[in-house]
Amino acid sequence: MIDFSLTESQLAVRDMARGVASKIIIPKITEYDRKQEMNPELLPAMKAANLLGFCIPEQYGGLGMDYISLGLACEELEYGDTSARVILSVHIGLFSLPVLTWANEAQKKKYLIPAAKGEKLTTFGLTEPAAGSDAVGIQTTAVKQGDHYIMNGEKMWISLAAVADYFLVFAWTDLEKKKKRDHSGLSAFIVESKWPGVSTGTLHGKLGVRAGNTGYIAFSDVKVPAENLVFKEGAGFKIAMFCLDQGRYTVAAGSCGLIRACRDACVTYSHQRKTFEREIGEHQLVKQMIANMEAAYEYSTPLWMKAGWLKNQGKRSTKETSMAKWIACREAEASAANAVQVFGAYGFSDEYPVERFYRNSKGASIYEGTREIHTLMQADYVLGYRKDRPIEHDLPVVEQG
Ligand SMILES: Cc1cc2nc3c(=O)[nH]c(=O)nc-3n(C[C@H](O)[C@H](O)[C@H](O)COP(=O)(O)OP(=O)(O)OC[C@H]3O[C@@H](n4cnc5c(N)ncnc54)[C@H](O)[C@@H]3O)c2cc1C
Image 1 (cartoon, rainbow, N blue to C red):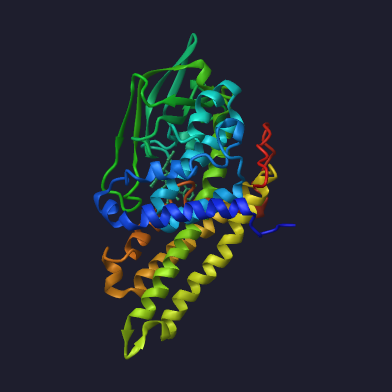
Image 2 (cartoon, helix red, strand yellow; image 1 turned 135 degrees about the horizontal axis):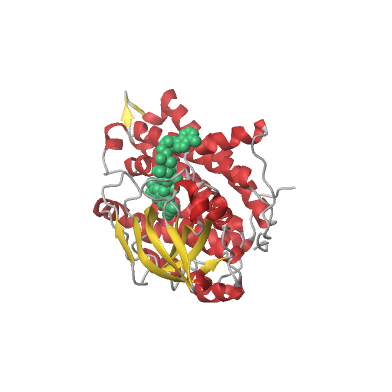
């Protein structure tokens, strides 16, 4: 039976993240969103609050907390700003948890421990200039030469690309399978940003997530030691899908924080603003928009919690995670659009946060599986075209915190 009550430790993680959002993110978010830069105080604050590795087991430098704690932290950080939640999505969801699951002991010691302690920042590189949803369309190659691979290619739209130390990179190791689009020719590697031939850059002019770094990573004849291959050759596609199961979960929970931020901003403004000699909150059509936000929060939250509950037991939750991500992102977009409406002309200005919520909400319906990809997945499950097989590797069973 699913139990939604929170333990003391889960509440403590939530409060830590809430503290970072209220003290570090919210006071300066308009400034950094305008500058399109990361707040330099954010990562040190997240590290000090143990937010960069709390759901990694203690033996690998974390606090051994569970997936529900991860969801709660994502919700609180995104209440502050989407860019802060994105850090947890890529660093924990798309790098650390997959490395915990798929990497060997030496790789965990070398890369997971510093990541969990917050000494090194990490991210995930799958998307390329010509391939996003269609992961098998990537062009990056890693050709084996003795005790290393030579990597060439470019990754695009990568969160934290220009600031991360380690990347989980997906590349073709079997060029014959690449020609046939056979995903069993894809492999995953841990690549260090400082290696010769690796270059990174930041993308500017984004619609949202402006206070976060998004960029590209280019590989030009990069010598990747064979010991940095994760699991085995040909496992890259399965590892990438596993990564997305964790990353999508963080986006779902984070989007609930965005819905709540929209609701709270609208409640405050609706009491302040008067038209026709009444608070606008007294008008039924404004009530409708706020009621929809409240409903969206209430039905989106149990969806990510159900996925987290399954993950805590080490069970596959691809369907549940996809559903949670699809619905929460859809509702966050609708809530943000209505929040701008509730604020009238002031919603059209960055004097208030709702225009930022509106811009940020759009990204989540694109990354970690677009709205269309999740729609197709859900239809395919019920139509019987898609069935999840247990993966050939045990998922980590994370103790309830
Ligand atoms: C802010 C941000 C951060 C990101 N961070 C990362 C990151 O850290 N790492 C990373 O690897 N990637 C990252 N991405 C990339 C993201 O995952 C991709 O943008 C996403 O997978 C979609 O791919 P695409 O942009 O190439 O769109 P495309 O795949 O080209 O899709 C274009 C349109 O066609 C639709 N479409 C595609 N295929 C189908 C289909 N079969 N049926 C119906 N419709 C379809 C899509 O839904 C979309 O509307 C990030 C993107 C953004 C915006």
